[in-house]
Amino acid sequence: MTAPVKRMNRTLLLACAPFIGMMGWFMAADFSLQIHLDDLGRIERPRDSAITEQTRPAAERLDAAVAKASAISASVKRVSELYAKTNRDMQSMLSTAKAQVGRPAAIYDRRITSRLGTPKDTVQSDKLRAQLFAVRAQHFSGYALKVKLKSADAMKLVLGKDKLGGAETTQAAVKRYGAIAGVNAGGFADARGKRYPLGTTIVDGQYANGFEASHSDLFFVGINKNLKLIGGKFTRKEQLDKLQPMYGASFVPILRKNGVNQAIPPKWQTSPARAPRTVIANYKDDQLLFLVIDGRDESGSSGATLKEIQMLLERYGTVDGYNLDGGGSSTLVFKGRVINHPSDGRQRPLATHFLLFS
Image (cartoon, rainbow, N blue to C red; front, side, top):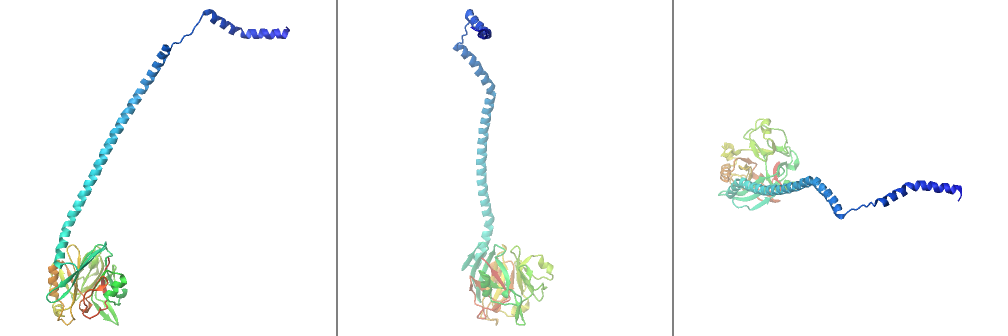
């Protein structure tokens, strides 16, 4: 064996000596290591128990949270059911209240309608309700049109051909505007081949020819922004402006005011005594009533007297009443057809018209 090899062997022996010694010690000491299953069980169980003790408070809090959530859910459900029941009860109460509120109005409407008779025709829409009735009296006949306005655009006053001095028949104005009905309105005066409205005339909230103070029994009658009939004699523009008129016209005389028949000026009692008539009136619930009475001519031998018209207005239960242009001007158009019989034998071209829209 060469010297290098011997040195290598000695080095390896020195390196392994500690390990060889330890093995010899274990063999000489008869040392044994025994781990029993029971011991293993005793070691693991305390560990599980410790973990359980640590997590028990969290588990208890979780159980409490679940219980509280269940209670809250049940409470929310009860509140929801109570809300739904309360809402149903409130709706029922509201419906009952509305019915009770509307009941007096319905009773009043039935009462005034019964005085007029049975409607010959009716137009009902979101804008208005218009009921047509026949009028039969001892000395005259005609028609009544009861109107409930529901919208600001359900009624308006128009000028003949939409201009001052213009004139057209009521039927022509109804057709041109596509209205459901039309009634002749204020008086007029002819000048230089044109037909101008008398007194104060308001169209779409504007004075057509300025304000004219009332004189010689002349009045203004129209509808304001609250869809109420307004009328009377006005000496100053500010008086009329306070009533916020949307449209209206002028004529003579006032027949009824605040449920009381007014004194008829002597001039209008006999000039003429009887004649075709057109009247606008109102009820306590702001419904309107138009009367259009027929007559053969303007000689004073046919038609109605103003006193008879007042008696009709009183019988029908109206509050205010205003005489509009009559004679050959009296015209009622309903659903495109002339209902009455104009005394001229044909329709008269007029300066102003009241139109109704459905």
